[in-house]
Length: 245
Ligand SMILES: Nc1ncnc2c1ncn2[C@@H]1O[C@H](COP(=O)(O)OP(=O)(O)O)[C@@H](O)[C@H]1O
Ligand SMILES: [Mg+2]
Image (tube, rainbow, N blue to C red; front, side):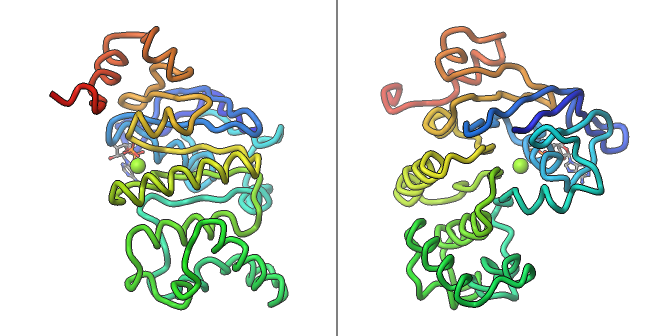
């Protein structure tokens, strides 16, 4: 569904992403994981066309991403921005329905989709009338996910959508989000820094270090056949309850 070919990104002298190839299978969930600052958000922004790569090409459903087809690709892509990225001056409802209103969907269709999605992410309907500042972190994340899903995109890109949530809400939302991804058969690219979450979601896990993909595979591949010492230490650093003492 999505292919990156020789894609890199330089900010001045610094390479945020070294030349990378990556393919996202249709209907599968791919998880990007790696230390803070390794280039995960940069990669996502390149896929969504918000950042132009310094080298390389991005292909979306067989077509190279260009300035000319960017808009139609965007409409087929839901993007959950890191930290939610809700517009503070708009109610939750206005945030969620922004694109549909822009595309002149009629009010009935918008209302139905709103109800459907609020139910899907278990957001109390009263929250929709509030501004983001009057919503909890978990509610804001749900609103961001609703906004990303509103146009029923083929591709869902989520940048740490469950970051900074308290553990019980996070646990519940992980379950919900995974069943949403599976039920809707979307091509999903999810960023996290939590390996347990990566394993829970990902058909494929892509481990990045300092702008380079160091290994991609299943959780078993990463655990049992680490490509190098970094992968091994990264996996070991994920403390499970069993290693508690
Ligand atoms: N707009 C920008 N200008 C300059 N440097 C940037 C910009 N965006 C990101 N970077 C740098 O690129 C690197 C990768 O950032 P990012 O993709 O946000 O990492 P991650 O999401 O993995 O934490 C970091 O060193 C960051 O400081
Ligand atoms: Mg990031």
